[in-house]
Length: 141
Image (tube, rainbow, N blue to C red; front, side):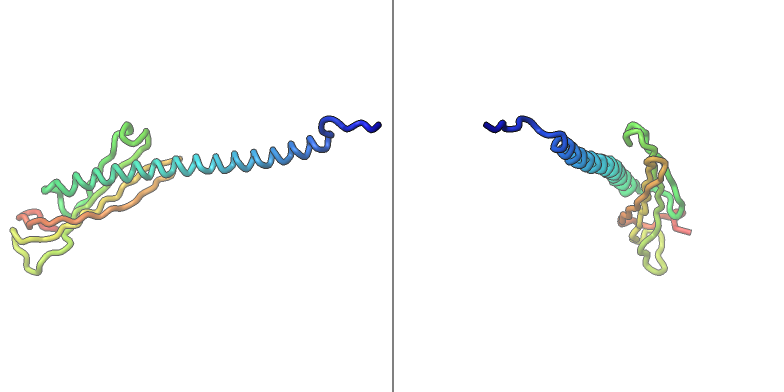
């Protein structure tokens, strides 16, 4: 009478362990990549929301200085502890020839938002347009 072998041989256990190690390594690598991408997307989303908020503020403020760059920053509590800021400039986009004070013009607001992640500064730009009237003393140089 023949005896049936019970259990696994050492070779079968080693092969199964090697296959499992390869699978786990691949899984951990993809998980690490996913977490890095999620963190990057989160910082871009946060910067986008702050940029939209700042652009809305700038579009609704009628007395912004024209032709000069002005800038500011955000409190780290609003940026998730990331150092971030903005710079903007208002220029006349469309202005009729020979425009006088009181003439209708189209102003462009250029907004650049920046933030730092891992020592790298990242930026993106937004543009907004609004109708305005030429005001004496606020003509663009």
